[in-house]
Image 1 (spheres, rainbow, N blue to C red):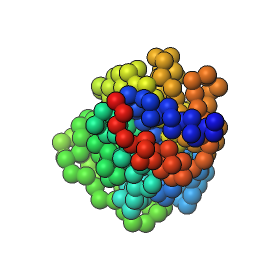
Image 2: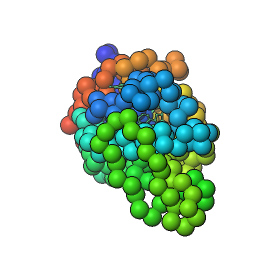
Image 3: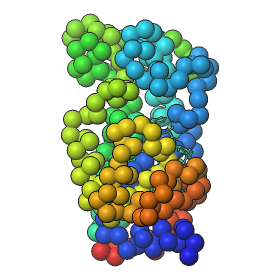
Image 4: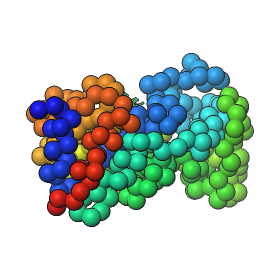
Length: 254
Ligand code: NAD
């Protein structure tokens, strides 16, 4: 049996489906993944270096400019066929929950109702000094490659920083717990467009497998671990997900 058909049958039989998504699902909406490298002003700076408190301390104007530019990219981007296919996938008369590492809001804009953002959101900013959320969210900037002085916190005059989770920081309180609980209690984890290198998020497929679920990976690269209850669908999320989540699959068989 073709692997796509096998995956579609597994989805059809499942009572509980959870999706876990990464940057690859938004790539075809024009938001680059972390594997794509940096351009312009940021060429030569790796994402892993820039997404840190250290980088912000050393060069706040560079990091704040990058953040505003990324927000602009996310504002301009539109949900693609993969986001839409997932928003239409229903189980037990409920749309499936989505755990995402993405800091864009394309799942929500595609119509998904339950979205757990492991790494927070590009739409929030907070004070680097007192950590309290910013009261006013700064506007994105239309131009790539600007150095921008971060605005100041109205409470303590500290510099504002992006509100999402940087490397080396803890995930938002309660978020990780919710994600683990969803994954431990699903029949199928549909893992889409993630390289599986950023922990602890990258542990979720392994947690699902250990709890007895089947993991279906959708990725342009082979990211499977070779476990027996894993299916690897290689290709673009926009091409595979609409076929996988066809009308037959969206019927509620619970
Ligand atoms: P990643 O950049 O490490 O990996 C992207 C994965 O997507 C790769 O495995 C790649 O093979 C796959 N991919 C690329 N194009 C694809 C496509 N069209 N269809 C299917 N798969 C495709 O991303 P990650 O695993 O999410 O982890 C890194 C971090 O990236 C996360 O912490 C996340 O916050 C951050 N990030 C988020 C965004 C966003 O919000 N859109 C963008 C860039 C990075």
